[in-house]
Image (cartoon, rainbow, N blue to C red; front, side):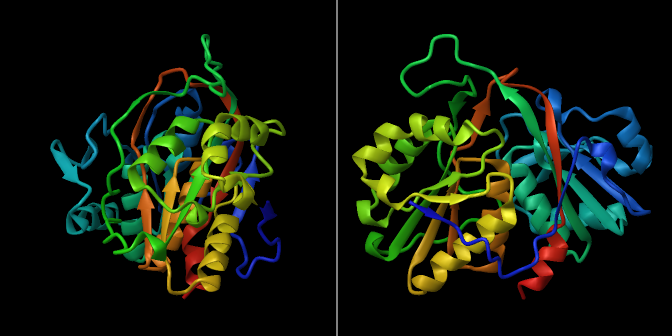
Amino acid sequence: MIFSSNQLKYLPQRQSFNSRTGISVEPKSVLLYGVLEQRSEIDPDWLTVFGEENTYEVFSGDNLHSVKIPKHQDGWISLRNQKELASFVSHLNANSIYIDITGLPHHVWMPLVRVCFEAGVETNCIYVEPESYTYNPNPKPGEFFDLSERFHGFSPIPTFARLASKRSEETTLIPLLGFEGIRFRHLVQRIEPSERDISPVIGVPGFEVEYPFHTYEGNAMILSQTWSWQRVNYVDASCPFALFSHLEEVHLKSTDRHLQVATIGTKPHALGAMMYAMHNSNVELLYDHPVKRKGRTKGMAQCHLYKVSDFLKQCK
């Protein structure tokens, strides 16, 4: 069991606030957001900061390959078509873009973050922690929270498809763990990795003190079956930059290996994995596209601002 080094190679670009309205927004900035649950709802005062013309709600539903942005156009925008996405970003004509990932699924916010950064626009991400998660009324062992209705299954995130490594012996699987052990179990069943090549990550410190224990209990069976409990690493659950540095550290120790990173834990960890995948072509992102249950969280806790562009510019 290893804690990721606190000596980060790059200066983290992270700020935390009690609410979104604590964020200082530059002139000529645009907000992209989606609404899934209470904490992703945008306060009217916050929209006023940007102005009506500079706020865009993004809709996806169960569609894994396209989105609707009614304020921009009536039809669907393909998430696989980087030129189409780049055209949307160009239309925004913004100096800075703030992407609130709280209410957007991974397959939507990841390509948006990528295209905004690659278009040379100052790109920032916002994430609001939940005050609490909804407990499962009829829990099985380790299933404390009622989070997902079902899963579409593992498939590439648009613009992040990679060729899998040819031999499993040359691959390190890094599952970023959350509360739902079924996701880790399905991952192992699909990938069939060698036990010695699994190196899980648990968010420590967690959003709350008890969350890492819930993560351990939710994943206890598969951690035990694969013996991967021996290789667990701990990385701050709310810091994508610490996760980026951890992945870089793993890669430096095994430069000839292909990394498969399963983003099945916290969104900040997923953001760190996404940034590292942008930085290194020998990284494959794995995601199982859950259909999240309505009312899965209650309330709002800390709000985080992640300055993606400022961080990635250091990494060149």
